Image 1 (spheres, rainbow, N blue to C red):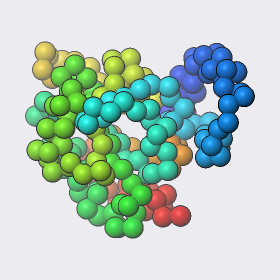
Image 2: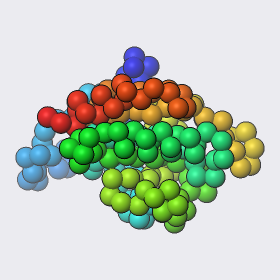
Image 3: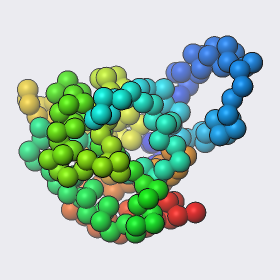
Image 4: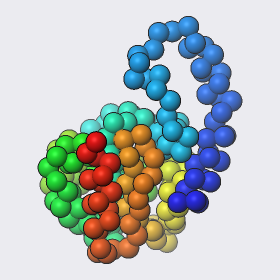
Length: 203
């Protein structure tokens, strides 16, 4: 968690000057009350990167504010760890109460954006019966992907033209995008993960 905070702070500081210039130009424009609520300092929603969903829609992470996020980084052509991570995410979703699941989104972030186009992500979602609104698949450019992975202390590297070596970490963020829990490993005890989701989804 300390590493997450340090990494997020470092990325946010890099974008301060750009944000300040933008804010100056928008000072006189009316802003909805919800948008004026300051994000927590350690919110992942502070990251400026843009992402594309499996539906081909461009979004920023802050657009997911208001829901608990359960996030994992995978790539769709993976034949080893990723299918097990997908199974872990499905098992967690099944164990979370219906009330909490109504306020939770399960998010897969691709570490292979060259291959994982929106069309491929949508096919993958259908193949894994994750094609309703509760499941979200994202791809970004290489820099955004590397930045997001670094913030979460997720390591990955290409080891062949088709394969990556990568960390197996499932992360839970509260409704303001603050990291509240991480589970590392495949098929490990998910009780703490479910507790974190329930705690932060149900106000």
